[in-house]
Length: 53
Image 1 (spheres, rainbow, N blue to C red):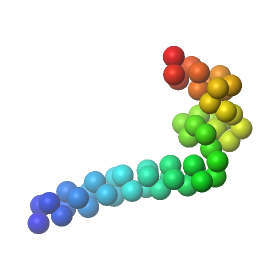
Image 2 (cartoon, rainbow, N blue to C red):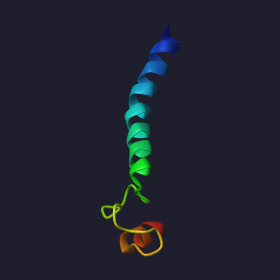
Image 3 (cartoon, rainbow, N blue to C red):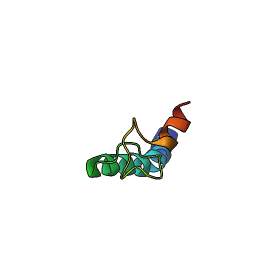
């Protein structure tokens, strides 16, 4: 029974995150963590370059 509870807790924690990522990618966002993700491209976004450095 403990296993089912642990699996349910993990699913509740990871489920919404995965749903958000999948939904954002379907909308065409290239970098989800970037505040300008709807209008930037990974190569030209200044905030994305700062995150990778």
